[in-house]
Length: 68
Image (cartoon, rainbow, N blue to C red):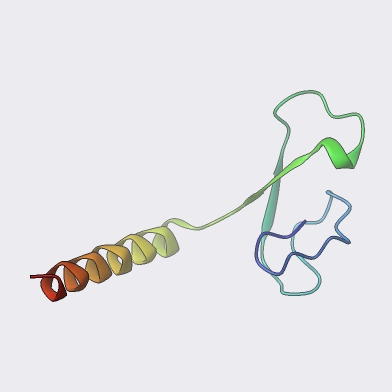
């Protein structure tokens, strides 16, 4: 299932979700016998992760100021 749009039509071998276009990365935690046993991770690039972290910190800062 796609973590963004919850598309359940994924077979587990796709590099991206055909519905919303989210990049997917498949990693095997253990030997995989069927695609249903695969774990699909979101493949985020480093710049996007840093941007998200900055935005979370900014929101936290603003929330703390409002609560004073």
